[in-house]
Length: 392
Image (cartoon, rainbow, N blue to C red; front, side, top):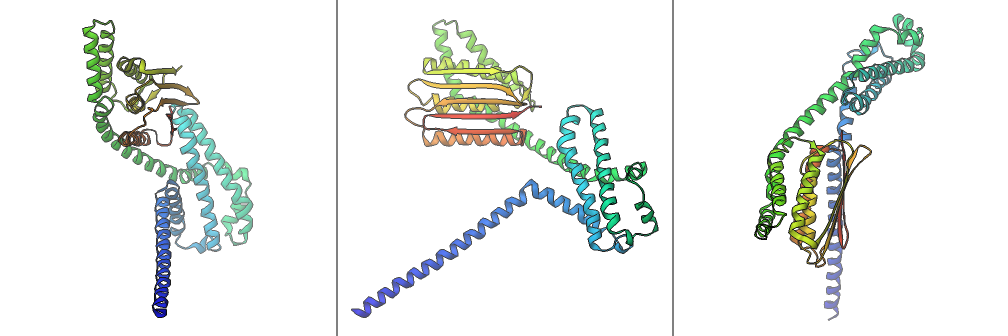
């Protein structure tokens, strides 16, 4: 009995030891997978792509030097010289891409754009000559040949006013900018082609999901009931339904449409839903748009449709939908609030809602890229969406 007890205790301790070893191995394996995933995400990031581009530019300069001993004291001198050029190119490129082009060239101010570009190039040329004069010419003067020593003795004004040298440096400074713009143009073209394909699917999906047969069936039933009662609302319902179908089929073919068309679409949709639900739904739509801007079509209607589908249709008592739209700081600010049904929302309804939000996010990424902000807030008794879209 004693031996049996000892053997059982040994087996238990041995099993615990094996379990701990397996747990450590699985933990290390998990860390390895997690690190690999983080590395892959980093490689996909825009920062890594830009960093790789500038490393390649620097390597191109360095590796293109056949005999560095003719002009440079050592490799460190070579690296610092071309490092200065690359730094000037980086400042020039991102100032053009993120400031001058969006703020002046894209807004059809070519004269001001060219003027500021020339000013930028003059500043960069002066910066380059200043660093070269007060650092390189002092640090490596003894290594210079006679021509370089003569140039090193010139004043900053003399160097900066050499027009032929300025033009050659301008070409050097702007070459990476041109390459980045070409890459950006290619990426935009790919997104445009992808957007066109998605738009074809979205148009069919819009009729299937947003203006689905269930919605049409209920609207036609309400219309039939109004016609039997000889209600004065019958012509209005027919007109609004006709406007919705006409807009979604024929008048939203462009990538962006005037915002008042989207407002009218939402108002038509709300009018039909008010007829459908009557006093069960408390609906408000406030819009304060004091200028004509454009917006991608049918995106806002998705949120409105979700509010009715997952809020009003499931509620037996009165529910609330509050919609607002305004312009603020170059953004279209759209918000929609809807109360949740007291009996809760089923899993299938939650799944459909999340799928609709996912589809909208994909369209926003293609249409607005980094020029939007979407916040979805879900509480126990309400659901709220806040969307900000930058307009040109």
